Length: 452
Image (cartoon, rainbow, N blue to C red):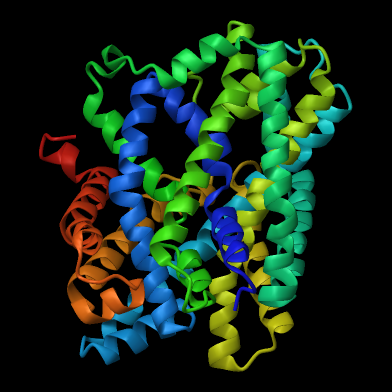
């Protein structure tokens, strides 16, 4: 069990807060015009993310096991088909695949900490920034070293257990992450164009949506869902360690609020720097690794604050990564009677080996394609576009339709009042339909029928 409610909130927030908040959210907001996207994103968090997160925590606490065993036990208790345990398997496989390439990307972050600190960003131009990034991902040996170090960091935390590892880590890392983020926002206020950034993020201009409103809304729904770490077993296993007297609804609102706050603060840290240097806010995935180094290289104290920013990114990646490994470790401990240390090492080693394929797909194995994609891109596509949204839809269906009204109201500690009825409406109809649309769009069905 988590020792306190705060420990659970920090851990679940750490799982949710990751590269998706500090890397993906700013460039996605930039691609769709800033404020209008942010408004739609927040609505999606409230209407889709919060109900599904409540459902996933509820299922975890009611089952008190790893995701696979939880779904098997709950399906049996409700008289449902045992095939529902496949939902648990999907979550563990998704987390396993995500961690294999997440570790590689976290390795890029570690590499950039030292590049920033050593002054390599100083007076760098777009060509130099592009060459720096290309040189990093093209160096298989260096990527392997960073990938290995990061996986060792993850295994060391998970191996120490819930109280001694996960809880101690998040009690240090999450406050440190928020402090670093606030420092970076303060730096943006002093050295960047903060007023323009605030207007860009918080003054919706729906003219930016013209011609791509459907695409932007789908992207906001996807970002809201993935940002909260839903559908991969992490929130479910963390919920299984939650004490019975802790309110799931209140905890979920706090976690979703903190996750959204981090995303917005990341935008307020990044966009002032981008605008102050006349750089493009819609520069896509390269915003962090190719656009920001140019800005840091031209700013007072850029080497120090550039390194600090990438330390922040590393902390966010680390808190998410430990939650991705935990469901697999819990299953190995429950089903194969492994010690936690042995399960953590075995799970971490397997992820590490799979990560080698991901990092080699960026260089030595760049010609190796499966369905036209390298290993890293393939794992990213399978998890983000198929496994996670499918898992989210199934969580919503099980919690809303398979679990009895008495069971869900009991676990959520809600009587049959307006709040419970609203959650039940959202989890039965709104959330599964919305995430289902994201899934259909991701696999190309909407485009095929002319709706994408």
